Length: 468
Image: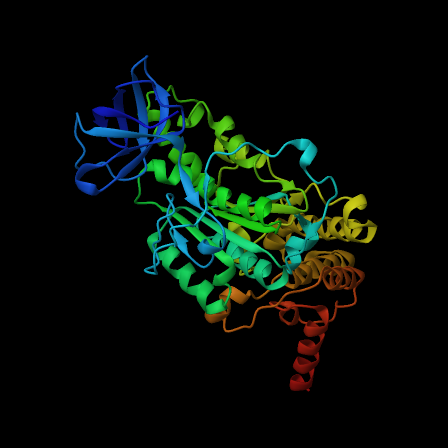
């Protein structure tokens, strides 16, 4: 549709009602209210009748009033893409927020609304995305072009894990990372920008933020803006992209706010009736196409640690790998605090990762599950009341838990320990040795926060020499 004009008839918070002076704009078209040169971009969400429509503002609506003129752009919201956005911090409309120079005028742009790639064009073969994080690569392997979600409550380490995965991508792969901060705190965005610069990876990363103080429309469309930038790298440049989103729950939350403002009847627990449709529209665009792929790793806040929450359930159905972070493990100092029993992946199959990997993962889970069953008995009676065989199995499970801990590169400034990246083969070999009893006489502390088993062996030898 060509550009036209309309005017504002009502302002209800971030929802504006407008009347068109000609044909109605299409759903998802951008319209602009321009009071005193401070443009407020809105997105058309519904048609009320043959002349009136409702739009969601992506900027604060203070100062707007009835009868203000509205410009119809005739196109969806478009964001800058390509080489010019690398190393920059942008908002939902592609405006820079890092204090740097403006983007070049000839920077290409791409609409945030795109169809999902057709199934016929998606690569059928599975290529693993190794992260160097032991517990992830062993129990929840990720695939290029796949989707993985990190589920957890507040303060269990979701953001640190996502940041470490950015480091893994830019240091181990010839690809680009796009980070979408959905409902992020301003402090976290500022810290991540400086961290990426300090790690030397900012020139291959794009940061797109919709902060928690912004209107729900901005938080709702930030993941689509980031995804449009990632799709351009995949489709136009033929390069792999790692798309990281923190936090997808805030995307659902923003959609719920908008749904209520538009007058839609809420569904269970107050969520929007279109919850499943909105989540699917985002997730189904994340795929491989041709010889390149968009791989998504998403942090998902679990409200009140309730994994039956409808938003959590809707997101989890689209995931290839599900990583659950445990508050109990975090309290024990087990980092990353990934629950090995609730974490799983569709790729943990003999045809994908091989028989040895699959068998080792199953043995690790079996041993830790047995230990968890014995914890109540140990708490009541003490480990001495167990049989010798049970004591041996409990000791191996505890050593396995500690071997699965790992210092992160992005947390080195806080822990004082240099990060470790561990090959999958070394992880499997270490776990098999512990399960077989090769480390039964080792101190548990020798296995805590190490990379390979060889590093743990060196630490144990040093401990024994010191004790002697």
